[in-house]
Amino acid sequence: MPGADIARVDAARAAARAALAQQSALVDARAETWRYTSLRALEAQALPLASAADDAKVVELPPALGPRLVFIDGHYAPRHSQLADLPVGVNFKPLSALRAEDWQAHAALLQFVGGGSDALEPLNLALASAGVLLDVQPGVVVDTPIEVIYFGVFASPCAWHARSRVLLGEGARVILLERQLGPGAGLATLHTEYHVHADARLDLVQMQEAGAALSLLRTSTLMLAARATLRMHALDLGAALTRHALGVRLRGTQARAELRHVVVLDRRQHADLQMDLRHEVGETNSDVRCRAVAAARSRAVLQGAITIAAGADGSDAALSTHNLLLSDQAEIDARPVMEIHADEVRAAHGASVGQLDATMLFYLRARGLPEAEARALLTAAHCRAVLDDIVHADLRTAAMQALDARIQSLR
Image (cartoon, rainbow, N blue to C red):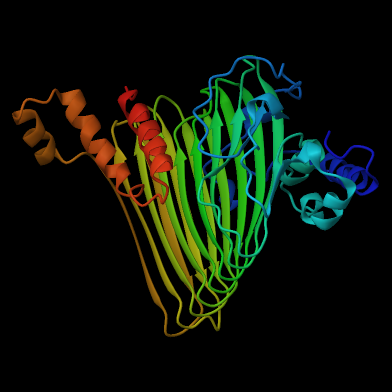
């Protein structure tokens, strides 16, 4: 395990194991945030930890867009990673490369909230073999994407865990791609904490294209200081089950968060987004837009809450989710929630669940398009509307290509 024989790391992992031993289940199934997603099938499996794969093993990865760290089944793969073009002022390394002073400077990697009924966080800390530290110095601007790739190869179910920390100093600008790929099966948990300091900007793209037999449980916590900007695009396209606990905290005036989320599901896939975005101070802005597509017997859950705290006057918040059902047996649960405790704010939210526009479908077919092609075209247009503003052209193209390939595969 990364950090073994470093006293503070060993102590933190031991505390996490002790907390884990006190839990009788991975999560409290009675909690509202777990109302739509059950982990009983996972808990019934005795999944072994993934062993380190042969780093020389051939895996098909997309072309690198910039510096990248690659992990295969939860273990760092240096031969597939690329750090030669790392800009000055950017500290980007896997957990396995952290030294004692790194663990001391970034002690938050070793912290977890104890005393609760959720075992996932201590589980992740106790067993994390993967993950990164990305620390960008103040004023550094990185124009090319920095990539973190998790690739699964084991066909027999196993478990792996990743824990990461991302920090952008004042005025820094970074484009970060986090991507899950490969046919690996079993369970993966990812915990990442992001700090975007004053006047900094993070363009974050998360592309989830994991194997059809993987369950992916993800926690992302993002904290924005004054005048910081977050622009996040997330695509959930793969995995049998995926759940994302997404927390955003606007902690400084004029902080702004733009979140875009696309979910495309088929067969019996299940995807659950639990978003908790909080305007903790006034004069902050948020804009959240979600698009889900569910085919066959799949199910999407989009439960998003925006809270404007007392005293956070002048906040501006918008939350919308517009979704498509492509099958009578598919299900989409959309629950946008606004909780307002301040005066003089602007807030709007809305949700819709429907089917493809019959008039547009007829129009396309009347011009010679086969039905399957017409349906795919309309479905892609529905999702592309929230991906068009990905800032980096090559990254935008990669996201669109992944989306189109997924839509073409729908049954």
